[in-house]
Image 1 (cartoon, helix red, strand yellow):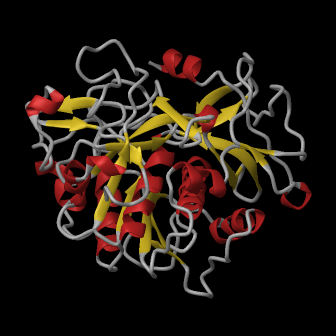
Image 2: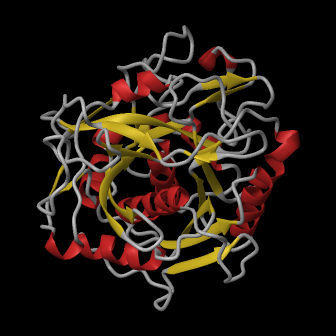
Length: 399
């Protein structure tokens, strides 16, 4: 699966540089084909009872961010989707969250989160989102102000999540909850804290081995809150928890490119998007075995851009003290995007994962592409399919 993912993201592009020296334009999609550009996981493979973040960064063979020529980056351009691109592609421009909050749950600390978010939002002309103005809150898993120890990989995940929410929903408030470790117990404790704060949505851009809801599902069981989870970045893989939970909206991934069609964009299955079927948990309301060929819970429910080669421009840490621009993707990107759409909808009563099944016409159906050789859960088709679920946001009506 790893080689398949690398091949799928061998399309180019990421460029970064000092924020003060970067122009205010970015390429919507980089040129393709350079062998030295590939995606790199920023979190290590988890052991049992733990999760790994699903963020992917475009790098060269030496692990450095690359520009459209596949060489070392220069401070001349930012490569990747901009907030304007995201809002246009998913028809979110001009919508307001009405004071609602998106919570982001990740593991470990990120000491420069507020600073880096400020640089990202200033670059694209978004309003400031700070602790002082009440837009940004950062706490540990129990709501305290003492942060966990720093982990650069998970900090890159947090940067991606913060920037993704800002891109899709600049008016959203953000609650960042940092778990002590990547164990499901600690991550779940962080989810429970977030749910207790009256948030509209909680994004979980991580996953581990499949699990029954009887083990960890209570952490994600929050009626009245839209809980989203990434389906993973290894293509067809069976199932990943918490995306396999009955209680969450499982978010798959697409490749998003500009087009001359009426929408202005084209989406296909991203070959790395996770999908699968689990018999450990029940399907959400509206998802039937006739639809999915799965007697239990099938993934995904919906999707958004996740291909790192068509991913988001992100200002993220490169060490515990320094940060720079690079291009990121993975279903770590699609989960906070969909969480933001739920917040914009303002309609999170009951279990939010049921809503797209009741309103599929409010989605862009993805009908081409595949993430593996399996018969039932790998290839796009009209209506529901494994990698992209029912489709991607077309405004907020499906949510």
